[in-house]
Length: 258
Image 1 (spheres, helix red, strand yellow):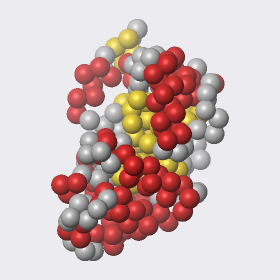
Image 2 (tube, helix red, strand yellow; image 1 turned 30 degrees about the vertical axis):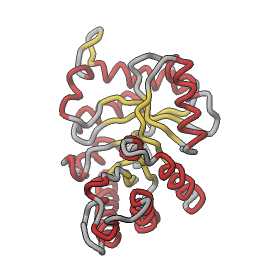
Image 3 (cartoon, helix red, strand yellow; image 1 turned 135 degrees about the horizontal axis):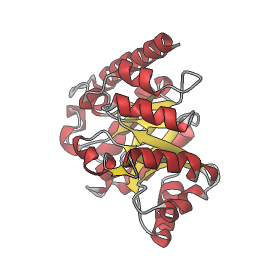
Image 4 (cartoon, one colour; image 1 turned 90 degrees about the vertical axis):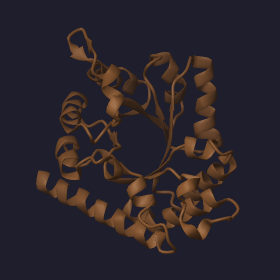
């Protein structure tokens, strides 16, 4: 249930990539190769590529993941949310240009803004629900007809949007009790769970709160803790060590729940 997030900050790349052409892509490829056998998914964050004009590197990286590790889920972390015609172009970008299997989307503009993504057979969305950042409660915890907004989002996605296409929810590991509530509301719907590792989410608490009826159902993301495990030539080995430790911690938590 481990996902490695690919958030390559050019200022933090290990020393072997100093002055190297296409360093972002090359770094990510080595991380992918070092960890692919212990993950269920990779999650490139589009902003870390687009901010320095590296979209072509992201395209090649996504193609490499799909072709080399076809059994690993490719999640494009783009958090798209716009009116229907614009959303159609965002869907083409995610599923066509980058070839992602799943893309993260915002529910704020309502069902018609997500519809273009849901129409794509063989693809799906993870909808932002209770995110891991400290300010997420500014709106997500506001009460709507007696319940927090994030719970309304969870009910809507599980009860309506999931009938139109493949859906999951994004719920942060930094809020385990809210995670438990969401799991109770949506049954066995898959959950993308950021927030372990550098953000401080507890793996055991996350697994206990978020597993589905089969003891699975989660895509637990760790980005910076894996990517920047070392700044030296051993960065790939160090990343693998952290990924293995996290994978084993998740497995131990799932065994304890069972």
